[in-house]
Each structure stands twice: as structure tokens, then as C-alpha cells.
Length: 505
Image (cartoon, rainbow, N blue to C red):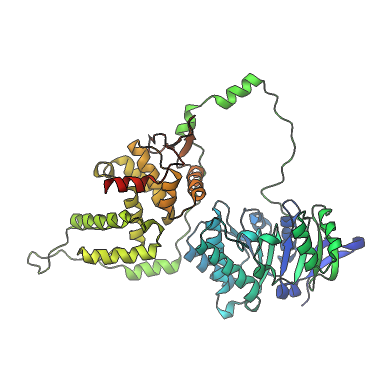
């Protein structure tokens, strides 16, 4: 069955359409600078094809969630574990449900990991569920970068591998990639090369215009026309659209994005002295009641996981007889032994940059060496206690109610960032200087200082803390829920934890 998707108007006002079946077999690449109308084009394509084919949108900015109200797409919040995203993706293919994977609110590395897990789940679906799916990836250069950036190599490899599978091997599994990017130079070549259909919008850099002209089979002297394209106008080529370069004006859409282009509006008429009062006057409530972004509701526990928990559950053990041959385990003694092993691991200078799997194996070996009684901690419990051990609290603070509240708050965060949050909370409760960027980066297992600063911004956006800077450039962190505030600390200082441990040794 041949289905034509109306994109808008072509040369001379003639309708411009896309052969949907051909598009599913040959894939599509869209390029255009910010503001050229890429998202508008993708929205038009999604709206026109929604009745005919299952759709999956990888949405880094949350712009396409409005499709749910009009066309029934299910919005999948990416703030879940990678395992859960993979399972959801498999069920999506099984039940042929159109979805929007909303990555808004995650940092770049988390977005890459979530998209990789989701695309991997769709790619690895059972053969019986290989129904055709239009997979639209906006801002594809984030998930298939041409060069390494500040994200870890592991996250980049996972994301790039998933995008390569989508574009190179996805056709036989029914996955048709539609990717949009601001610049071809930012997109990995092995991903871009697999598309046979192209829609090139406005671009200004010579290298991007030259590559666009080469892809469309145009003379390089004609590449200048890409500078003159208006918003919403593209040059199209490909077996699903046209055999020769065709100018296309994208038609209107039924839904709108949540984020829109900024519009000019008059400034408020405020006297200079009133403006200064508004800016410099500190309201005490601002420190105690920061603006909170409500956390997303916890996802429902899958039925399969509940059944697995029931299978693993065991009846309560009967009370031990007085004449038992085996002595009972002293839980206090066992916890003290576990804490000692964890302190040994944290004291290792290279431990911060090792993977959790390697640290867990080291932990199991040390437990056997120290003859720690009882069953060893599972991986999830180990991650939690390792994060607490890295905070380095003393016995007096460990029994304090404020520290227990900090532990409770940290449970709402993912395993990899709990340790960073607890280190900052410990400094605030102790009245110590705010940890430096180098200290937080080491606790996160990275050498990137900018990623450490982004974590503080993430905590602040969730309303967990407030970051202030005094007149000397020192950083202060306030915890409204704990009633605690750190002393001023230099964010550019070297690793505080490493220095304190070296001094102790």
C-alpha cells in the first residue's frame, strides 16, 4: 500500500509529499541551523504519518510531548533505570504503541545513556515483534557526536552504538531512522551516511553548505542558496521525496511545542532606585524556601519484578534454640566490620575512578580476608553504603537527626550521584568549607570540573539546596530542609579529600 505524506508545497506551489513505505526503507536526514524549522518539519511529518505507522520520538527538550493530547502518544519519562527503559522499549514494540521518550531534565550524559538503553531495547526486540516503526531523533548530534566531548567514553560508545544500529541495521528490524541535526560536521559520519533522503535547511558555515551541496548532488557554486533559505523552507532529495533537488515549504501543524521562539516585548517602566531595590534586597524567605521543582512520581513496579520478589522472599526464620550448634551473628559487630572494609576501599587513591563492578569485587575479597560474618551485601546495598562511606561522617554526626534526614533525601537520587550529595551535606552539617569542584569531581569518578558544577546545579533545580557566592568568590551551600549551611569554600581549590587523607597518613 502506497501512502503519501503531505509535507507542504514544492516548486510552483505543487504539493510536496513523501512516500511513507519508501521512507521506512531508506531513512531521512534533516539539517538546519537553530531556528531554521527542523522541529516544525519533524512535527509535520509525525502528525501526517501518525494514522499510518507506529512512531517513537527521542525528544531531548520535551517539545514533542504535546503529540500525546492530539494523537495519543504515550509519554515515557526517561528518569528511570536503564534496565527499565530497555524493558519498556521491548513492550512498546510488542504492543505497537507510539511513544515520546522525554529526556528533559537530564544532563547530556544521562540523556545519552537513557536513549541508548531505549533504542537498544527496541533494536533487540523479538523477531515476531519487528513491526515498522518511524524512529525520530531530534538533535541527533547529541547522541551520535563526531568527536569526544565532556561525557565519559562509556556513555558516548553506548549512545553512538545504538544510533549506528538504528541507521545501519535497523531496516531489517522494521526501524526507520529520521534524524535531525544542527550541523553535519557534529554528527558521526557512519550515522549520517546511511540516510538516502535529505532535507537541508538554512545554514551559514561554508563547510556545512559544501557538505549539504555534495549530499544533494549540487554544484558547490549553488551551495550559497542555503544561506538565503527562510525558516520552514528546505531543499529535498531522495527516493522517497524527489529524484532531483526540490525546494519545499513545510505546511502548518496541528500541535505546538512547549518552548517557542522569544518575542520582543516592552520593558517595564521601573525607576532606577526601585530597580536597585528589587535586585539587591535579600528576602530571608528565599534562603529558607527555595523554588522547588516537584520530583516526578515514581514509576509503577512492573508485574514481573513483583513476582520475582515474591519468589525470592523467604519465611521468617524460627527463633534459635538455646542449644543451637551455630552462634548467632552479632549485627552490630558485622556492621562495624563492613564499615571498616568500606573505609579501606574509600581510602584507596584510585578507587574513585574505578567502576562499581570492580569496586564490588574488591569489596567481596576484602570481606573474606577480614572474615566478615553473614551473607555479603548485594550490589544495590553496596552502592548505597559506599556513597555513605565516601561522605566520611564521624560517629557523633552519624547519630544526628539532621544526618538521617540527609540520608533519607539522598534516596531520591540515582546511585551515581548520592555520594556527591552526601559529601556536600556533611560539609554543611559540620559547618566546614564547601567542597571544591575537584573534590566533587573525584567523588563522582571524573576529572571534569564542569560536570561537578552541573551536579550542584541539578541539586539546586530539584530544590535540595541553594548555592551562593560571597564577595570573595567563595561558594556557600545552604540546605533548607536540614537547617544547615556550609562555610565559604574556594571552588577552584584542589581535591580536599585527597589532601586531608594524605595529611592523616
